[in-house]
Amino acid sequence: LSERLSGVLDRLTRQGSLSEDDVKTALREVRVALLEADVSLPVARSFIKRVEKEATGQAVTKSVTPGQQVVKIVHDALIDTLRGEGDPGALKIDNPPAPILMVGLQGSGKTTTTAKLAKRLTHRDGKRVLMASLDTNRPAAMEQLAILGRQIGVDTLPIVKGEDPVQIARRAKTQASLGGYDVYMLDTAGRLHIDAELIAQAAAVRDVANPRETLLVVDGLTGQDAVNVATEFDDKIGVTGVVLTRMDGDGRGGAALSMRAITGKPIRFVGLGEKMDAIETFEAERIAGRILGMGDIVSLVEKAQETLEAEQAERMMRRMQKGQFNMNDLRGQLEQMQKMGGMEGLMGMMPGMGKMAKQVQEAGFDDKVIARQIALIQSMTKKERANPALLQASRKKRIAAGAGQEVSDLNKLLKMHRQMADMMKKLGKKGGRNMLKQALG
Ligand code: GDP
Ligand code: MG
Image (tube, rainbow, N blue to C red; front, side, top):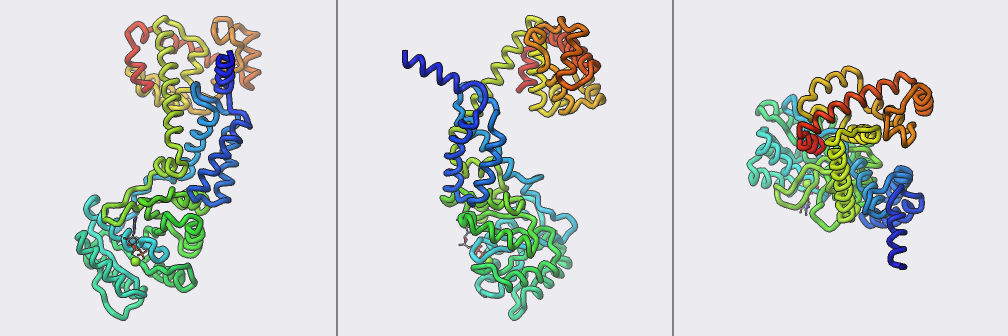
């Protein structure tokens, strides 16, 4: 008996929505995970707060626990924070020769990353690249870049003794123009810590080269410190993106989250080793999984959600074939549409519905409209949803008022429902099963 009872309780907590307690409990563990991943304390704190607000009240997917559901929500929020706009790997290199300035602390991986990116631009994108070392502090540093250049088959600016970084930058610019290069990369000197001289030098080089991209190279293992470095460089020099190196190590990469959250700068690439191919375009999903370290739970919840959607689609198809299509079905469809990028997206995928998709588009059928329609359906009673034929004038008035809309809005919804019901019947008869299956993915 006790087993059965606990089974019931379990089911009770599993269904419905996330309570404040569910969320708080789960987030305690998440907080530990973030701190262990080296996310800075204030960032972890504000991130947790944000998710707490977002998660409370959200629905729990069948067959997962509230804790698991929260982990999934955290995971998605992490991705959302980590991801910048556009393709992180697309460097702005139109208008040749395009200068790319590499900045960062000593030992962060600037020289290595310069060569890695040069190799990528040359061999993958077919660009002509010139690399120049501006590291006059250590003679070996210039030689290091020259050796890498020979290794990857990319030209380096000849070394001239006695020049300062600004003079080298000028020469690189001239050489890049005269030599017909698409890109020239300036690998600057770093220091162990940020100081005024380092910043002044980088700023002087920036003013000469006017870089299209200024990439800050940061050791992904440095955690907290990385944020201060990034803030300082961005304030003083202005960076267009961050490269996180040493992500091949054991670190969980929490610096990525801290940096994104505090500087707002996009992370563009990650370094994954010392070899010249060991660089990849930044992928938010991957780093999110690594920071949270709860990949199993995330995929479990995703699977449960997929299963549930498949079940819903299956149920829908069965109803269609029977020629049933009530307001609950319509609501399910509308919610699906919201998820799949609106009505156009869905109908565009269904054969024979291109014309209707166009009408829908012309009618200005966007996400806001869908949300208003769902509100109307929510305002109906259970009976009315199951049987829309019940809707006479007085009921219509009540429903429209309940959703804060006009009866004419409701009439539009009802018309759409009728049209869709007709269509569904036809599709159901014509063996639209496979078609719908395809459309719903
Ligand atoms: P710089 O002083 O900023 O120019 O740093 P370097 O490019 O000279 O790199 C310092 C050291 O870090 C070298 O031994 C590199 O091979 C190594 N390194 C750079 N990037 C990575 C990376 O992504 N992973 C690993 N494991 N080592 C790296
Ligand atoms: Mg260097």
